[in-house]
Image 1 (cartoon, rainbow, N blue to C red):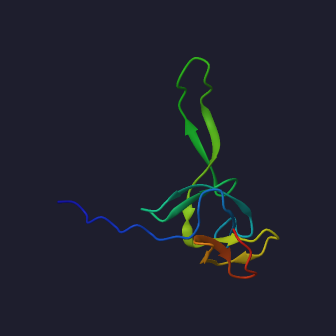
Image 2: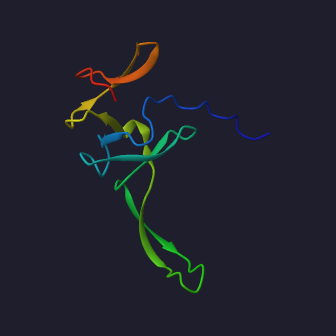
Length: 110
């Protein structure tokens, strides 16, 4: 029958959020979220977790060889950042009938 499907991981982070890595080999680095995989609970962050990958030549013009690209990291290893660079958690509040995300540390809208 196969494995039972894992429930989706809930996250308050979204694509294009500025985040800081809080654990792992790139601890302390910051970047922008490029993609979120909620099923696996992983995020792809710009310039973080760079790995080398051997790529096959696909066409005449294409150069094969070893390229460097970003790999996904666990969502628990990143935290949202405020505009001035502080780590923060994300909250929600209703303003003028709209639900907005805000930084819990200083209350600014994200």
